[in-house]
Image (tube, rainbow, N blue to C red; front, side, top):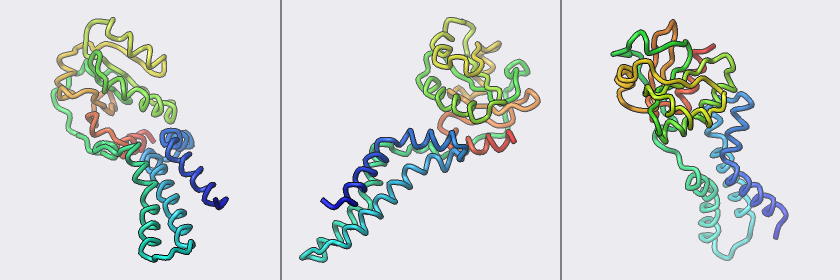
Length: 218
């Protein structure tokens, strides 16, 4: 087998199985959240283009077969990459609200990002990794992870996963904070002068929203 095609196949396999790592490395390098999310998919498109031109150089008895195969290899790496790492509706979302109602003065104790959660919430738990990365990229950002409960025992699993990366506490007024969040968890609030200025639900806090948030911090 041609050495070049072996290298191309090997490189494509590496791309397909390192999507998350590629995105994480891009974020650590300071590349925007949106571009970091796109980079692995761009790599699959480049791999497809490489295969396309390789197939075009091969002699086939049937030109139809040749260009059919070339067209297939053009899109195949992207299709496989997308199947293994699907893009969900909220991944690139930036929609949010800048008119926060039903907010109590005791709901927000720190400027920065307040994340409102409830006990044993898988989506809240799943947001922690992204919040850790956000904190690493913005060390001065205060993140307040608030659980809508008065029982401290509900903090245990969250504290173990957060492992000191940012603050975790119970809400002073769980009912008020849950109402302000629209009873959708987790909810993310950008707080300035101890007042919520922007709010995103979990399906709105995509990579474009993260870029918007970081632009507010500058």
